[in-house]
Image (cartoon, rainbow, N blue to C red):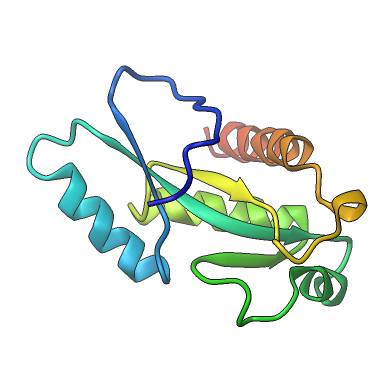
Length: 131
């Protein structure tokens, strides 16, 4: 399980369980196991993110692959929005926690709140376009 220093933003009364998984398949299996038959918990997946204007810069800010374990994403904010939409559609998790790369220097740490707001806006736009 992940650390306890996080803010919960959920829309339902269900209990929330935050998990870290090695990959998306493991996350999906974990969600299925935790939700069981009644589906009364929301499973929130940690995703380590490095967002930049281009993929190469994002990968550079992610750091060494050995230092970052679990589900991770390096790319543009539009690509991150696509990944998160896919995570929901495929039933991998009920939500995500965006985690910054540990290799980022304090002054170069990503503004995860801003990235989250931008991604939410993009997801809302996609949802309206599909409706």
